Length: 244
Image (cartoon, rainbow, N blue to C red):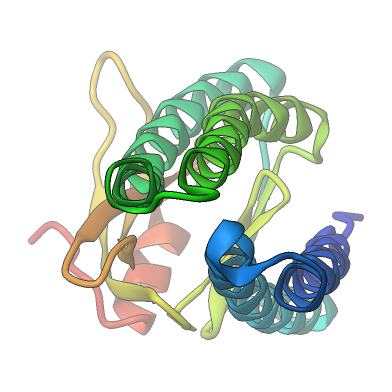
């Protein structure tokens, strides 16, 4: 049975929100505002609010995953051998690493600009605040680099299976809702097998990673041999494209 690890992510996000909210409160009440207290309070408030938004995203994903796993008759439920699953994990890992890189450029760039402002224009406490912000940016950089590797190891150890339902899909233990906060599903397409790769169902998504930046990505669900007709029916059921 595929475990629903999204609930752990909800708990971790809420814990981060509490920690950042506590830092915000201490910064505002115990540190002189002109000595960096206001800046640290602002950044920690932003991170606390972001953590709450992320927890709501994972909450929705957890509920969708529970619904799919408890569905007695999903559209499709396939299991895969190790070699196919590992090749898919490596492909998803590269996409995840690229999305994390872009996300760090956006958030890290914002923090870097604020740090530069305090370093240049603020006298007392400015350099100290800039140093704190740069330290926070360094932590975000490290997290953005190690998170894809952690996700890769998790996917390697997850049950090598796919579930497809009307509300979303689960692949390698990760859930992809068709309706979600900051993530949009654009449809699916059946791609026939070739000499080098098996038949797959391509699910197209896009994710908002900045105010005006949308990052597209795909989830490729391999179709086991002999399940091509089922895959075509699934795509038709979801309103996707099939070969004529």
